[in-house]
Image (cartoon, rainbow, N blue to C red; front, side, top):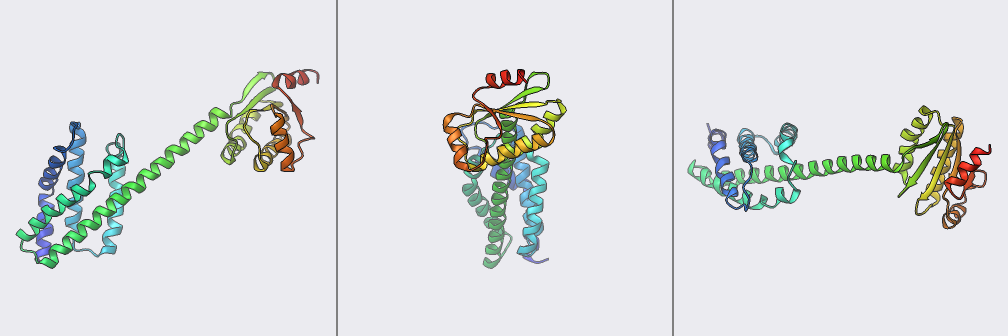
Length: 276
């Protein structure tokens, strides 16, 4: 057994003790007392990391990269309830440099005590640094993915709240457009709102623009497409709330809205509907 192999075995067998020492050291620097559950999970995570380092110390950089990323993601899926539930990214990264330095100092002492050459000590520290860098990179990537997922869910909730169908009498409803009207909103109306309109057996839909700030060419084209889809499935549309400034914006887009039924207010549209 060569010295690196002997050191790897030592690291695997003593990963728990080393991890506890590092965790205890870091806890002394905190101003708050962490729940025992989080402390235990931190020790467990560090133990798993050191065990992985020991098990893969003899692997090539390419092989260890692939295995570490897979290991890191599996660990995250298994323990995700502890990893990010109440932690901000700042709280994860802030102690990183000091923890890294402490871990390298500890492993350097162990390496020297185990009789590793200077070259071997440098190799161990380089591998440790590389895995720590991979760990923080994967952590940031995962946090960004989570943030994108949360934003996507929030956008869907906003679309649902800002595109409500309001039935006002048999066969008639209002779709008030509120806030920004962009691709996501128009796509949501196409894929979710229009099918719901058909299910409710609505024959006439008032689309109210009172809550829309501006209309550009792209918005006008999407609105016109929504009107055409509704017309194809037998639903009459009435447009309301197009203010003078919005009307000018529509004209400037070059899209002809003159053939559509437009009214100043929802009340005017309802009155016109009642006379039909």
